Structure formats: structure tokens, C-alpha cells
Amino acid sequence: MATARATTAQPAPVSAVRRDFSALLAYVLISPPVLIMTMLIFLPAAQAIIDTLFVADNATGQSVFSLQNYIHFASDPILVANLQFTILITLATVFMLFVVGYPLALYLRFSTGRIAAAVQVLALFPLFVPGVILAFALIRFLGTHGMLDTLLHLVGITSYTTPYLQPQGIVIALVWENIPFTVLVLTAGLRQVEDAVVESARDVGANDWQIFTRILLPLSTRSAVIVFCLNVIGVFGAFTIPYLLGPAQPMMMGVSMQQTFNNYQDRIGALTQAVITFLFCALVGILYVRTVSRAR
Amino acid sequence: MAMTTSTRIRPEGLGAWRFVKRLRRDAIGLLLFVALFIVIIGPMISVIFWAFTEQWRYPSLIPTKWGLSYWQETLSRADIVTALPLSIGLATVVTLLSAVICLPASYAFARLKFPGRQALLLSFLSTNAFPRFGLYVSIAVVFFRLGLIGTIPGVILIQIVNTLLLMIWIPTSAFQGVDRSLEEAALDVGASRLRVFLQVTLPLVLPALSAAVLLTFVSTFYEAQGALIIGIPNVTTMPVLMYSIINSQVIVQYGAVISLALWLPSLVLLLFAQRFVRGNAISAGFGV
Image 1: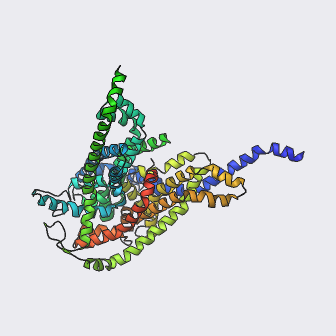
Image 2: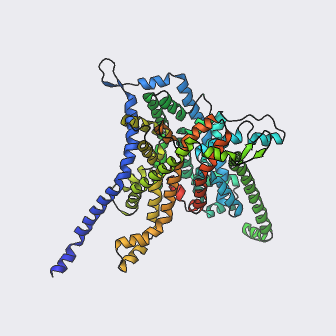
Image 3: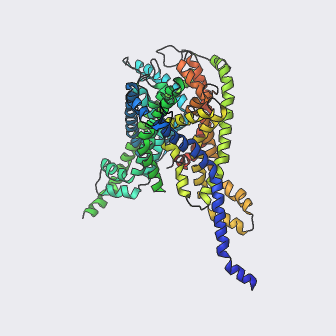
């Protein structure tokens, strides 16, 4: 009798205890990475904003709110030119990535067989080439008297001017670097549109262009948004490629920050530039996190 | 009426139409392949050529004199002899630390119910939502105050940041993908929870876990920007060394030999990863 009562009465408390225990265990297990992320991402970013907005007052020695660091940035023509240059390179690179990425993604979405597999391997190949090696390879390939120059020379074109140390060099390399991610995500998005939908549009007489713009694009906007966001943030925060392949002036913000921090030892100046890049990417970053969250 | 005409037309037209369509698609495919091959593989070929060059005079398409003499010379340079073991050691430590920190967490994210689970999991996307170099500069300023600039612990910490998303999201989706009924069946026949985990769950997630570990190791091995800004001037990894070799480029072959030697681990990964690329493991690392 006692045991029977126990078994009927107990299930609720036991499962509640177990649930509490499992939640507690979960928090213990996830706290190390959450802590690291907080200390190495959120705190430094918040600290950067505070450090640049509060300036020691000369008279009292106390920190007071001031836009002085940002005014200094805005009144320095070189830094402003760097910011404009970064925005321009970002727009050009992201535009080119869509121009290159969509045809590849469309082809891979609708094709099977050996040729498609080979195209896919090539499109994903840059994923396995680290930035420093890519920079070196592109200098040898695109540089004056490089392989491309030689090839063109063989077919009689001698007017080749190298994009190395030019803005175009940065765009070419950043497009190269980001093709795999772009194609991977765009293809995944296009795969979510079912064959039947495409077939029925074709049956009512839609041509390829109409199918792309009226069916495929609207039904795969999520993947396009992710591609857009991560490429914008990626290019805006780039360092290796613009540092090794870009012109000395103007510089992209990554290069500019590194010079300010390492060469001029101007930490507040570097932080101001960092916060400005955060600001420019904030909207895009929020859009990215929201797009991914909504899908899950 | 329209339907009958279309069904009547199709039989004789269909075969030829399909053939033309496939031909057109294959032609597009070949065109894309050739274009990609020149653009993607071309630069890599120039690196390989340069690594085995004694002399290369413009406008020769291939080296005018082949040879291996620069390999010995490059690989015995003092800076490389110290940087290579350092890079391998750092990448190993970062990967192990990241696995110890992240894998239990990914199990919790996949299997345990707790308030805020989804939001916390998504918060790791923020490692992607910041412009990378701006974030590194912010970290560098904090590290400067803590005296971590130019130290190995400083470099390890900044490189761990990069690994979090990959090391949490790929294993989490792997643990979520395990069929719970298999585990329940093992429990029913009397296996202990530990045994079920070791003999049923673990083998099922092992491919994804090893993909995550391998991707983390390789991406950490090649990580250059964080190591540059934090490591200066005492800690010089191989990729950081590449910056100065490319910028000073007195002898092209040095850079070519190092690039080729450095690139080998990545090539191994490429072969290994073919299976995972299709399994969407890599896109999970982007939060897709």
C-alpha cells in the first residue's frame, strides 16, 4: 500500500527535480564557451565604445562624455578617405560576388553529373587556401610579368597593367576568397525551391529569366540575405588581403587600424576606427542574426 | 484542346529537345569549369612552378630552369625553424582547449532543456556579426592593459574566439541528428547510460566531431590576423612570417616554398572534407 502510494505520488516531484538538475547541468556545461565569448567579444566591444566616448578632462582629471575622438576622426582627411575606400571596396566586392555566385549556384542547383561535380569542387576550392597563401599566389599570377601577363603576351596582348597594389587587386582577391561561401549558401537556398514549382512555372510559359526573377529569387531571399550580410561584414573587417595586395593609400579600415595600433601605438585612435566599423556593420549584423534565428 | 495538342507533339519532340537541353547545360558547365579552372587553379599553379624554379625569365610560360635547391635553403632558415613548431603547437593547444570547452556545451545545447537555450546558441553567431579586425583591435587594447600583448597565452585566447562557432554549431547539429530510439533501445536491453553514450551516441557523431576538430585545427594553423596584432613582436607564427616574406619578397622562391609546404595540411583537409561538404557540415559553421 505504502509503495503504491509512493509510486503514484512521486512522478511529478522526481521529474521536476530531474528537470532542474538537467537545466543546472546544462548551464554548467555551456558556461565556459559563453564566458569566453562574453569576455573576448562583448566586453572588449563595450569597452571600446566606453573608452572612445569618455575622455579624461584636463582640468579635473575625471572622465567626461565627449565626442572628441570621433570629431578627430572626421576631421582627418586620410582617415575619412580610408573609410570611404572601405565602403567602396565592400560594395564592389559584394556586387561582384553576387554576379559570379548566382550563375554558379543556378548551374549547380539544376545540374547533376560529372561536369557539375567538377565545377562544385573548383568553386569550393578557395575554402582550403588560407589568406596569406592566396595573397602570395595572386601576386605571382596577376603581378607584372606574372603568369597572366605572360599568357596575354603569348597571344599578342602587351598592354597588361597589373591590379596588384591597386583597388581592383583587393576586389579580385576578396571575391576569390568568398566564392565558396557564397556559392554554398546560394545553392542551398535554391535547393529549397522544389522542382515542381519550377516545372509548373515553365509549363505556363515562363522563360528562364522570369523563373529566376519571379520564382527562384523571391523564394530564396533568406540565403541571399545571409550571403549579403556575411560578405559585407567579412569585407569590412578584412585585413590580410588589403594589407598584402592593396595600395598604400587609401587603406582599408583593417589596415588603417593595424597601422594605428602597432606602428603609431595610438590605441584610442585604433579603437575609434574599430567602433566606427562596428557602427557601419551593426545593422547588417543584426539583420544576419535575425535572419538565421527566424529560420530556426 | 490545348492539352491534346501538347501531348501529341511531345512524343516525337521530347527526345531531341531533351538532348539539346542537356547539350546546352553541359556546354555551360564546361564553360564555367574552364573559367573557374583558370581563375582558381591558375594562381596555385604559379606557386607550384615557383617552388621548383631555379630561374624563370619573362616571357617564358614555364620556369627556364627547374630545380629543388631552394627547398633546403628555405626550410633551414632560422625564422622558419622556430616558427613552424610554434605554429603546430599553438594550433594543437587551441584545438584541444576549444574541444574541451565547446564539446560538452554542444551536447548540452543538443540534448538538455533549459531556459534561454535557443538564444544562447544563437548568441555564438555574434562571432560572425562583428567586422573581424575591428573586434581584434578591441581585444588587443584589453590585452595590452593585461600585459598579454606579445605573449603565447594572448595569442591562444584570440585564436579561440575564432573556433567557438564552428566547434559548437557543427557538433550540436550532429548530436541533434542522432536517432533517440537507438539509444532507448540500448537502454531497454540494460546498457548503462555511459555505455550507451560511448557505444551508440559517440560513434554516430564521431564523423561530424572529427570534421569540427579538423576544420578548427587547420583554420587555427592558418590564422594570421589575430596572431599578428597580439603576437607582435615576440610570437611569430608561420602565417605571420608570411606577411614579412611577401612584403620584403627579395627571393620569390622563399615565399613559394613556404606556401606550398604550409598548404599541405589544407590539401589533406580538402581530400578528407569532400564527404562533409555534402553533409552540410561546413554551412553549419556559417550558421546557415
